[in-house]
Image (cartoon, rainbow, N blue to C red; front, side, top):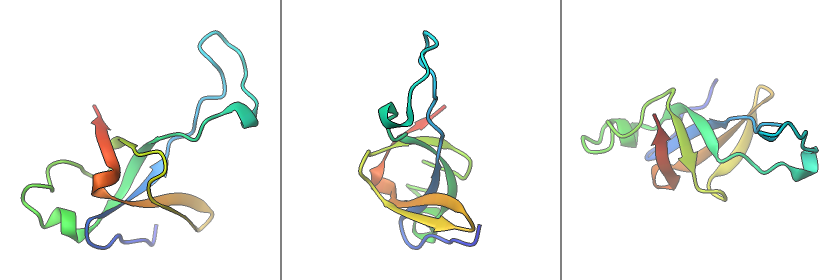
Amino acid sequence: MKLKPLGDRVIIKKVEAEEKTKSGIVLPSSAKEEPNMAEVMAIGDGILNDEKKKDEIKVGDTVIFSQYAGTEVKVDGEEYTILKLNDILAVVK
């Protein structure tokens, strides 16, 4: 990846939504919701240099983020979302 987030920004890659329900029903693409879980791909220097924020999140974490947050970009055929640290709601452990 050739993206480097600036300031307090984070680059994430959305986790693919499941295509089947727990009961085995296959969902058509129109019925699927946009996933709001993603993997952290890169973290801006504003977060890494801040003593309070740097331990909250790291590259490789799975996070839950606000539904309409961020800006979507496409780099080398891959889709990423750039958002502020404040738009991340939780880290999945």
